[in-house]
Length: 472
Image (spheres, rainbow, N blue to C red):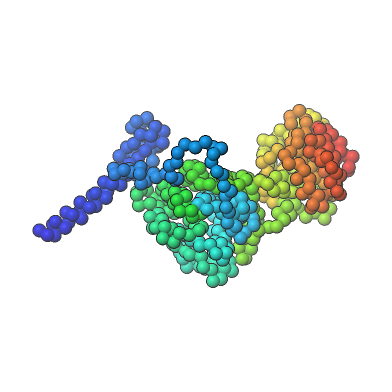
């Protein structure tokens, strides 16, 4: 009799717990719910829109969807006292540049990249530097054991590191550890391996990634712990999981670069506390990732003498001007000439070839045209137009541009050369690296001469071509 009563009590407790937290499926289109997964929403008849979520019969909104900040009264914007965001340097200058100066208290950073490109290596190095500077740190690994992390730290030369390591993938245990240790900076490697017991779906699913990221973001804002989430990427290079993941966090960083090359780029796609499109340049060494002090050297080929088809431009990556070599190869093509560009927009290349023919008389209709940005960098700004056109002309004529020559400027369909933003900074960076001659838009011509540099200011494409012909 007593045993039966005990069993009844236990079953009652389990059923009560299950009643508080049960799984439902919510439609992404209409917001309707279903007690079980269906291929088609019973409310709006949309296919494959039901996503698993948790429903609680006992005041779910109060606990599960608590606000990230305390509710405040309506206040006039001018009456709110604005305070500068305090930053904690990571000990790696290039990483600090991308973050906008360092880690922010309560900030959430999402970093993604191809497997093996160096995400975990860089973050382990940053945590060790932070720990040595007096900050408390926590490294949560869901893909490796503690012994494997320790082995990697030895290989990186991080001897006697005091970084705390937790090998765990259950969200509730991770949150309890964060609450107990209260670290200044925590890394979750990776968010796709973390799961919550409130959901029945597998780790890495849309529901799990969204729910775990929301809980970790709420914890960061409430406790002041800066959290870095490592994210997997798809075969197309985008962050795996729901796009809402990028909206939740404060900063989104992408690792770029070929895994077969020693150089890596970390680019800020989103940053609430700093400039976007800022990049940090690293070199992969036996002791981990090291910042590159002169990144322009990566994107310039080392030619003993000038070669045809090469033109150097100055591009802006965030707040940093970088010198990048644009290479062109023009060769006799067949009935259907090829147009191939690496690091630049292919459609824009076709447009520039048409402008080059119409306004400068340089015809490439029967020629194969190949364009490459040296070093694997991707250039998205139109300021590369003039350098692309000059490199094509140089390759077609078989005559190199003068040594120490640079060019930049946007080219319009009417043949006009438009100014590039922050032209003065571009020219000063080029002069600092020893370049002595430039062709730039007339609006970018400096009011005061730059010592050691001859500047040719042009309004149209044909003017730029005439300048180059006169030089060579």
